[in-house]
Structures are given as structure tokens and as C-alpha cells.
Image (tube, rainbow, N blue to C red):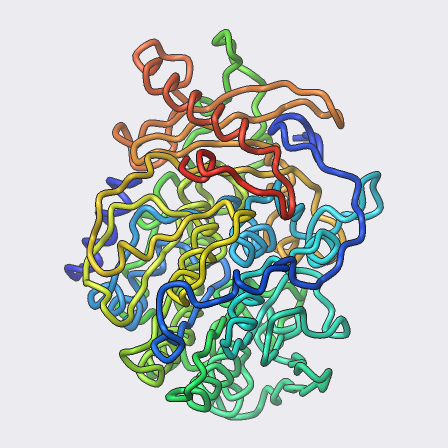
Length: 564
């Protein structure tokens, strides 16, 4: 094992149901939906003036947002590893909800799900409150106007988007506010081949699936990850060196699974890599990048098939609550390792154009690499999926390179709601008071004292309905995860689940895990007397967060709440 791989594994070691759709489990009750405008909510032009730097000095910024990219895959990507060596890495980076669309809404707005109204991956209609997730909820609650790209564009940035946007977004809906160039890719790209790309003017380019008899090179020209990367590099080439700065968000579908029943080609794996990275006569194990595919195994999936009996939540009085992990355990070790290796192979197509993108952008551009959530493969007694508050799902890679960025890991606790304020700050913009996140740009120049001691997660249970892209592989287990709110410190995780099946009732039960005892969530120790001080401290922090959770949409977040 190479030295960097050992370092990444070390970071993982040491740093690390029926439930109501919206319940007071998280005390984050929904509001009846009301139509809101997509127009930016910023009404004072002075807010858009450059606050910190002159226009000519404003940097170019690229955000690469991978899909279901878990920490176990970072070791395989050579160019990502080079980013970690040359720039800032954040071993304590998390997402506020480990669901694709919910997380992406939080990234764009710098807000928690209770603020955006995007609580699930799909709209889940019909129901009494209107769309509760997906593009419909994002649009209904005015999130396009609160997205940070709007403020960048209005302050003089050329803004570009390439790739996957939000679940249930229709190409016919046109480009949301704040994007100068728009190249959204249809959901067919989950399967790797055969998809549409829509432009800002509504024009649609079809990328057809090459014949199964076409050469590997010809087939890979149409592979979605390669196409998205090519469009991204082209954007940077066209705008590099312009007087007008640019912001580019690149969102490949990799390493998400395919969603079609048959795949683009006969025998396609559930996680379909580019043809060049699959096992072949020349390379029997396939291409897993910086590590050999054969070296990836169950050691990279800590907690695989861990017994679930000692994870049952506890009531306040210490009584054991009913288990919510009630699924049959079907995923075999061989299947989990196969999927892990295929996901690593998928990541290599991203890694190749990541290197070209960084080289093309040049040393004066900031490049961020992160993920919308992690992924579990048999950990926690579950099958494949995300949505839990556990390390496999909420703990994500975050790397940054750019001008003045000092190499090395940072001790800061950060979440994806901090990305919008950070990029705004780099662009010389003050952060509006409706964002919950705070900028970590001061840590880019040099590691700083980590003031934040806790981060928070919130999740709303919802059955996978309609076009949920995760139904193919989840085996129904993602539907078991109850609504919860949670608080994470460097050393521990406290989760409050709501086990009540009603719309407005609550039945709270708790799980606590001390990462000083183990690298994953082996045993719930909430009721142990020895853990009472840690539990009490985390409960106080969680209570403070809940007290701050009343703000919705464009309502101001107090400085005290933001400082949490």
C-alpha cells in the first residue's frame, strides 16, 4: 500500500421503518407549498458590489461535484491524490444530508434542507403539502434565486454548468436563473450511454449509444463521463484568460449506479465503467487507477456485515427501542467487493479529465473536488445506498487547489452548506444572511485554528417513488431509514431518530457512537453510564441547532446560529 493510501486510510480510522414523511422528529415541520419566483431575492444592488478584491483580480473557480463518490475511492484517483498533495484537504468534510438532490440543493444555496424545502430526492406527490423533494420542491420554494451562482453572475462572473443537475429536472424546463452557459445532461446518462444535453437556448444535442460492435475507443467517445469532462474542459479553454472571471460547476454522474434494468450493453455491471477501464485481455483486473483492483476489498468497507443487534436505538430512559434496520441481509461479500471495484473503475474516467481540467484552468484558478454524498456497500447491515448519518454516507472528500492555497490537511469541520459562502468570499462577495453556512476560505492560505466543534445532519424519511434513481440497487433499504437529526463532533456521533409512523407524532430514540472506540458505528453506547458526559454535551449542541431551525427560505439566520 502506497504512503498516500496509508494516509487516507489513517484519516478514515482516526476521524472518523416506517416513519413519518415530515414529523416533529426533527422539529422541522414543512410549510404548505406556495409558488415563488425564480428571480434572485437580492434586491439591493450594493450587495453585489465586490467587497474584498478588485474586479480584475477576481479568481476563476471550478467546482467538480461527483455523484455518490465515497472516501474509499479517493485513494484510486491519481489526479485527486495530486490535488491532496498540492492543495488543501479537509479530512473532516461532511454533507448535511446524504441524499443526492437534498445535498445538491444545500450546496447551491448554502442552506439546510429545512430552509430549502428540498427534503427528499423526488417530489413524492401527491401529498398534503406539495412537492417535498427533487427539482419541483427546489423550484417551488424559490431556491434557483438563492443559489450562489446567481450572485456570481450578477456581480460579473461568466457562470457555466455541465452535467447532472437535480432529480426530476426536465430538460424542457430550461436553464434556471444565474447560468450564463447551461449544458444539463438527461438522466439516461446514469447508464453511461445514450443521453441528451440541453443548452441555454433550449437546443438539444443527442449523444447516441454506439453499437456494441464498435471499438472500445468509439464507445468511450460517447461515454457520459467522458462527454461531460470534454464539455467542461472546452468551457475553461474558451474562458481562460478573459477579463471576465468564470465559475464552472461540473457534475458527472460517476460513480453512481446505472438505473436501467438492462444497461447500455449486454452484461453491463450495475456500476458501469468506461470500456477502457473494464477487465480486458490486456488488463485482466481492469483499471482502478492508483491502486490495483485486487487490493480493494472488505478492509475498505469498515463495518461490512456488522451484527445489528447492538445498534438498536435507545429511549431516553435507557430502554431499547425497536430496530429500524429490519431488512434481510442479502448483499454478499463477493458482490460488495465487485461493486467497490467497479465504482473505482468508474472514477478513473473522472480522474483523467480532472487532470486536464486543472492543467487547462492554470495555477490562478481555484478547483474544488467533492461529492454530494458518500455510499455504503453492506455496512450497517444495509445493502447498497446512502441516507444514513453514518460515516460511510455523510463523510465526503473535499480537496481545493488554487492561488495561495497551502498544501496539507486542515483540521476544520466543514459541511457542504459552507461551499456557497466560501466561493462567494473568493469572488469578493459578502454572504447574504439567509445562508446557514460560513466561509472556510481563510483556511486555504494556511491551516487555521478550527473554531467549529460540531456539524449537524438532518434527514426526512420518504418512500422511493416515481423516478428515484436509487431504486434499482437499494433493495428497499433506503426506505427504512427514519427521519433524524444528528450532531457530529470530531470524536462522536449522536443521532435522534423518530420512530413514530404518524404524520405529526413523535417517538424519539437515540444512537451514540464514539469514534475513539472504533472507526465505524459498531455499537450504540447511548445508554452507557461512562458515555453520559459526551452524550450530554452533544445533546446540548443538538438542542442549540434545533432552536435555530425555524428559519425558512430567505429568512435571516442569526450570527449565533451560524457560529454553531
